[in-house]
Amino acid sequence: MIEFGRIDHVGQVVDDLDAAIVDYQRVFGMRVALREELPEQAVEAAMLEAGRCRVELVRPTDPEGPVARFLEARGPGMHHIAFAVPDVAVALRGVAAAGGELVDERPRVGLGGRLMAFVHPRSAHGVLIELIEDRG
Amino acid sequence: MIEFGRIDHVGQVVDDLDAAIVDYQRVFGMRVALREELPEQAVEAAMLEAGRCRVELVRPTDPEGPVARFLEARGPGMHHIAFAVPDVAVALRGVAAAGGELVDERPRVGLGGRLMAFVHPRSAHGVLIELIEDRG
Image (cartoon, rainbow over all chains, first blue to last red; front, side, top):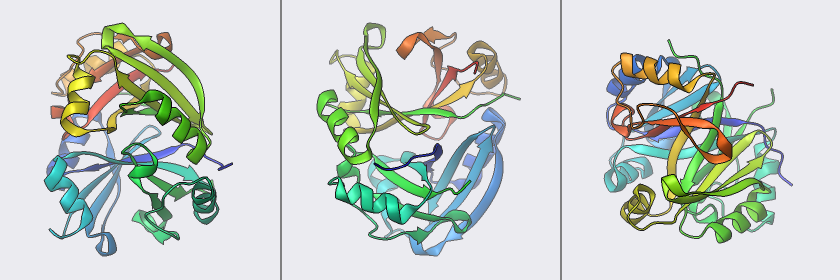
């Protein structure tokens, strides 16, 4: 049994990160907690917060990357859900043992230096699920 | 400023609710907290839980309804994010005052009898945002 915490955040793909930040600030009163480029994932990302809600806005930086292809195929919108887990490696093994298909065989470093890994959408009826470490 | 709690749940559209429940139970160890038909929204919905993560699986029951059209256009996948708010009517007024475009001008009753309302995806770069009452 995998040990889950909360929904850490939801990830959205946008084509204009600055414009999206301005709109989320204006309409929902969210604030930017973190913004950085993640060259390994070919994106620039910003984590926005309001209360205990977190939304990660992601803009592709390489037209050949997977997020650029997602944006091209589906347009801006919801991209992934991140479930907080105390140990990403343990959770990955649990998902794989239960027959889940992994995108990442082992944890890697994502936004804010946190360990994370993706489970393939084929294992969740079309939904890309991120497992992200939260020891808190 | 709108007062937000946590991400209450994330909604996914599926074409086969029974199969999706079985897979989420098997791969992620989630359990069904609630399942009911919502004729007004032309869906059958199930709320699945693991830890403090909640996922609402939604299957269209009317081929002419908005969820059926979403499924037809985009296939199974992420549909909405629900932000918990202490008072949906107050939050709706806040979003509208900030220039957000509403789907629901006033709260209505959703899964489990809880008050909720949708904000239009045009206000959130392609993301359908639900505001859901959580007095807890």
